[in-house]
Length: 98
View 1 (cartoon, rainbow, N blue to C red):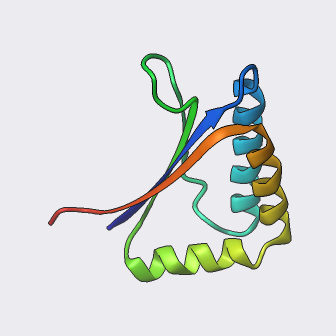
View 2 (view 1 turned 180 degrees about the vertical axis):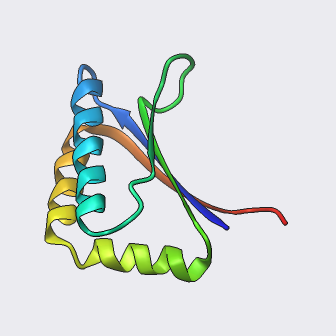
């Protein structure tokens, strides 16, 4: 199992806009036939304002998902719009411990 996690650290006053933009990107994922994953919103602590996570059955499934995103102009546009709202962005990819 592979898990991709992306962390969105909003510029001052942009947390709501970051959440809306992540929701937009999630809808594009649905339109592409991809798993929408799940959006998490920070309630406490110093972590990212918004986090997105998605699980994949295998490395191949993850790579196919990345390729589908890479072919999508709508997803590229959403990504570009998101980065304007961010102070910092992180992507982490994990493998499940068997």
